[in-house]
Amino acid sequence: MSINKYKYNLSNAFIVILIVELIFWALAIASYRYLTQNVEEFRFERSYVLYALVFIPFIIALYFYNTKWRNNAVTEYADERLLPYTYKGVSTFKSVTKFILLRLGLSFIVIAMANPQYGENEKLVESKGIDIMIGLDVSNSMLAEDLEKGYSRLKIVKMAIEKLLDKLHGDRIGVVVFAGDAYKQVPITPDYHVAKMFLKNINTGMISAQGTNIGLAIEKALSSFDFEDGTNKAIIIFSDGEDHEQEGIDAAKEAKKKGVPVFTIGMGTKQGVPIPIYRNGVKVGTKKDKDGNTVLTKLNEQYLIDIAEASGGAYTRANGLNVGIDGIVNQLNAIEKATISQEKYTGYDDQFQPYLAIGIILLILNFLLTDKRTKLTDKLNIFDSNE
Image (cartoon, one colour):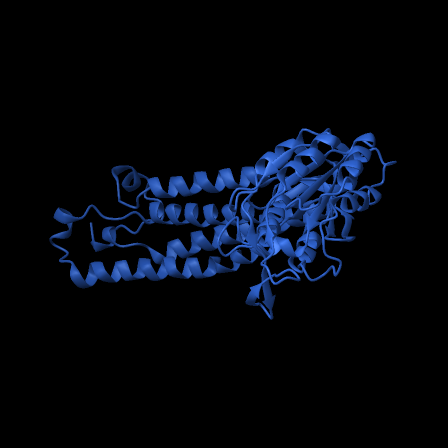
């Protein structure tokens, strides 16, 4: 047997691979035309992935380059007399089969990644939730940094509200800011992104009338609700509670009559701390009274507890950067959800699974198969070069 036993028959390999390519592309084009013309809902979810198939000619070229290099290596570096003792030889048939398995396996993987879809169906998606108005105290006392060094009460509240919005699903929210007066900053909306955008611009200078009028904030929140839509409501108040008027408790009782619980979150500590004064973002001193004494601010916890109890809500006290958002979310989730919106959309059934399975099986077979010559391939003599 000549040295050809140890070399690949490139001409035969080229013919076989060319035939396989022609059959593959003919079947692929015919199948695609049939599906697009006869299956109305057929499509590729990620059709751009199919462009990866243009690399197949490069893979074929790489195969022949590598095979030719191996042929040359046998001629250049091996002694023909020693080959029978060191090398069993190679099978062109097995080599081509191994390559075709790889080529087809990769093609089916690409098709699976493009995700062929058909079987159009209409789905109805319901969004269930409640309406939540958030009351945010923006009085000057919220600039105090008694909860965490370097963080004002207001900054901690804004961080907490962002975290709250990240945990809500399907609920509509709105924002009321208040000090001595109250204003609706964000109307009831399902768009949390909008709420976050407005939240970033909230500061203590946006309301000139100083004080902490929680009662007015609750009234403004109640007026923001549509009580005829059948959706349950809730109000969340973030404040240090420095409001000594009965108005807040009266507003909470009115909220209870309308079935709206008020959840209060106490911001601050019970120890009096000064209120910093900033100009152009720089601390220039602390707030003084008319006699020149430093004004101190502290948490009025009992007042916030009374408001929560009067409305049937609950009170939570902030501790450092922890405002107890998880507990608030659990309380909100306990409120019965109502259908807020219904949306219809067209869906398609994914059909990538069989293509992926075929691709993986072909690649596994490619991995398991070797191109070493065996007695069986010698007997079959399938397009191998032997003399």
